[in-house]
Image (cartoon, rainbow, N blue to C red; front, side):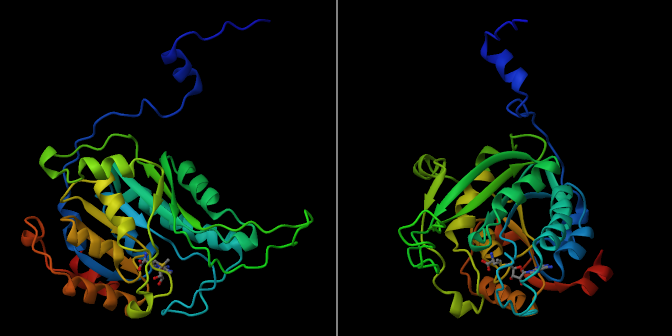
Length: 307
Ligand SMILES: C[S@@+](CC[C@H](N)C(=O)[O-])C[C@H]1O[C@@H](n2cnc3c(N)ncnc32)[C@H](O)[C@@H]1O
């Protein structure tokens, strides 16, 4: 039987059932229950801390999870190597909480470097997890680091098709929206310039990796430029930015510098202390941060008494 061709653009969009029409405006008032978390570096397991946070209270999540690479993180030098399914199951519990705490119109950006040598496409698997939680896929940025010193210098099967090894000089940033692609905010709280907008809406970003990791005593940081672009492109000033795997505090620091509020969670006391030290060293006197709570470290125990 011949099926009639769909003629117009609207009908084609309707048939495909993508999320293009998810563009309703949500005006959510902020719950005072989020106050004890604002501008806090919270030392604890991400899932435990997140379960204490109120629903629909966060504007933007920027994070890079532990990658299961075998990094020697301070809290437990042996905790970054797990069987892959076990690793993804644990991450999913954190993503569920992230989805819950996001406001409608909120965004979540996850920086991922897959472990290509294990042939596990982490960026695809994490994207599937987030999509299955109902988040709407928004974008994928290819962060070109021009890292030609990539560790694997043997090309697999040299000059033979038997098993060539493909090398990558970039990482990925997967971005999702909650419930709608439209985020409401005040015009006076937009701070991206025309030049920045033109450059950053292109899906390939080129900037260098963090070179001061030794100084900050952390093995896997992203540079300030990464959260800076995401914040200016996807959030308004005064918004609350969460990083559930905050490390040495790059997301929190940039939020503070850019006139956003922050919540930074990390399991390592050493990294939480470093995050606070970096915040204290930042010379920030913006109109917005002037009236905000001074950055402080909390533990799970403090949260039990405060919330
Ligand atoms: C890739 S690093 C993030 C680095 C951060 N983007 C920066 O620039 O400093 C991942 C972080 O996750 C933390 N981490 C690992 N397991 C955790 C957990 N269960 N809860 C909270 N943080 C955890 C590690 O201590 C590490 O600092």
